Image 1 (spheres, rainbow, N blue to C red):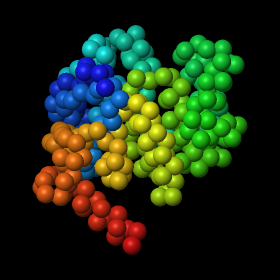
Image 2: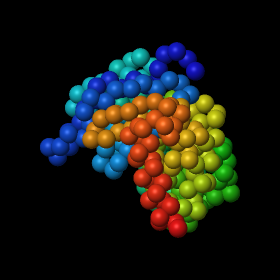
Image 3: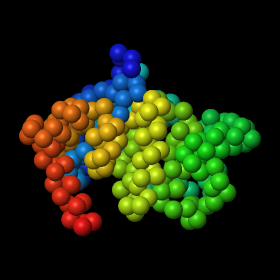
Image 4: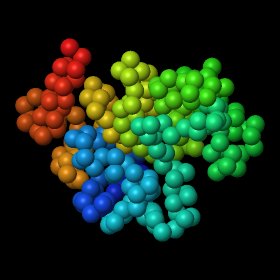
Length: 254
């Protein structure tokens, strides 16, 4: 990993509907790192990720990509930034009227202005990368939830992002489909993709996260490696939350 951060978040705050959702959130991400956001619902994880892609404009603070502050009032800045920071949503955000190949190749043609043949060649490579080479002609309605999420990952990868933001990418999936998406994300992490991911998949967090950020009431209240925050003797808020989460999952599947 390089010494300088690829993404820096400084004192980010956001109010929605008169309620403070984020309050002074700061952290940085180095190239090749996986940062994982965990914490109770309503803690600000999704809003933070949406602010990092400027789907919500922060009320205060700044975001720097490769040391350059992004001006949210500049369409040019946002356009350039969003080409370099990919976003994966819980609900896939695919175009229902386009097949998998067109869903992945569309931005390459419209944003990067690649010829259709070149865009489709790249799209096929990314579909193959996520294990869907044989599904390119299928439409979202013909795909499982796990397959749809893998198409959305392929679409983001096709843009060659410097950073990937993943907002609980397995939350909408049936339990038997979660593994196929986590396999793809695990391979991306091993290949050096820089990622910020909100998730409740604690086995994945323990094995893959470089650092955990525990969020509650719009703030990062604990930050550290899985070894630091999930050690049985540490008494962290993170460990307490994960223990309750494990009990819930055990009760639901038992």
